[in-house]
Picture 1 (spheres, rainbow, N blue to C red):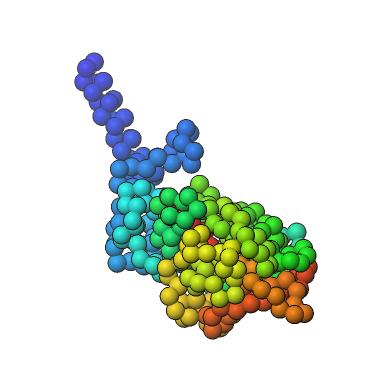
Picture 2 (picture 1 turned 45 degrees about the horizontal axis):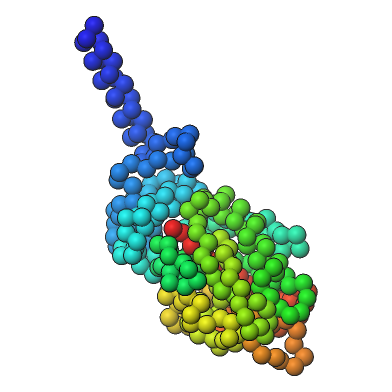
Amino acid sequence: MKKKMQLAALVSGLIVVAAVMFIGYRIVAPDDPLNIIPTPEHGVIKDVNAEDLSVKFGITSTGPTKVTDTLIELHAYLGKTPDATDIKLGDYMVLPSLSVTQDTDNQGAISGLSNVRVLVVGINSFNGKNGNNTPHLVFQFKDALVDRTMGVAAAPYSYIDSGIQTYLKGNFVSGLENAGVLSAYLWAPSRAIAEKYNSTSATIIADTVWLPTEWEIFGANTFSVSAAETVANQAKLEYYTTADTRKKGLSATPSTPTYYWLASPLAGTITGAGDIACTVSGSGDAFVEYTFAPAGGPLGFAPAFCVY
């Protein structure tokens, strides 16, 4: 009888081991918020020199699962190594596909983009600003995705409550989820945005997906409101050191640099202009766009998000 019990225990143990090997580094558990419990090997760098983060962490799954598995590893890695010493600016993830439903103004529809690259453009960039203190990586799309307007309702221009902010907080987050970028691994930093065109004060917002400010891209105020977006409340995304690093093409024509939106309103007044927002030009320089209300002219947009 004792031998039978020992044999049964051995068989049971082998089944558990086989199940773990089959599942990989994940064990499904109903009480875990993501139904994922990592093994002790979770968050270990496998190839320190790889720029593709899925290769860096030895991910072998495919499709959206590959993206999710990479985020799982990044989350565990940042928990162990808050300074992210083995992650380099310019390292990247590839979203095998990305589709986003258009917003209520019939803008921003993204259908069937493939192999969409998002770059590491900052490492703990927001910590020490506006009360942020969370180990994180900042990702931004390598290319502007499609053209769309800012969707401002009326003058004076404001990113806050604009059509594009609403779209990025809603439809775009859902599109990322479907691509494998689970919201559970995204962190919304507290960021200061000038309240409106020609404003002298800032509002703190905390969005999961967002457009960077002029300071975050350039590390200075060229056209943005210096009284509202300041060195004290603005982060600098460290990847962007030259005009060439700031250039982005549209996803459909990535080799041709395009103009793309920033969140910052313009400082000052330009006679005859309507609502005005800061942009990055096709040459990678600071620029402004005369976005006459209500819709404004369409430009590319390259959202950013933080993983923690």
